[in-house]
Length: 255
Image: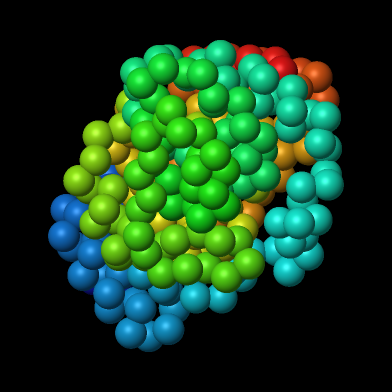
């Protein structure tokens, strides 16, 4: 395949998914990851793509749904469901473990239930989560540095990734914008890029997703379902989606 043909195929693959990961693109096209990286860099110079950690997204892809509510508004959505998910998820946290918790209003509900779990260490890139953890004197807390995303109180970027590279985490419990056959999707490219790196080295990923998150997707994929160990959800989650998750080996816990 000529380089021009290969790059055209790369564009098609990224356009179909909204995002392309270097290793997956290399597998699909049958070339080395280093070749894919060079092609992506070349395509970025033309304005067709934007490079992100581990791959690329379409330059025209939106940073996220413009209608996404602010955190203070999201905290008012489905409060009972979030509490039920948090009650179920806290039972998956083992004493003495190291836990990664990224930002999200459902994650905030979980943090309030961590008191009393002995020997727990929590790693986070959310200043909101860190503030809640500050009220739990028995919990060790590691706050990842980075660039502040105003409004969301999350820390992102290269500094965040450097800090995470120094740590070993047993399990991540994360909220999500949406969950579908494509996996977990985010509403902001920079946030998703950081989350993708944070989750990359975590052996077990638990997702908090009430029924409203199922089938909802954006052009910004964080991880595929093959990386998800368990999904904690509620009675509103569509039965066909729950069955599909279980068929793929994902544990589903109803809150």
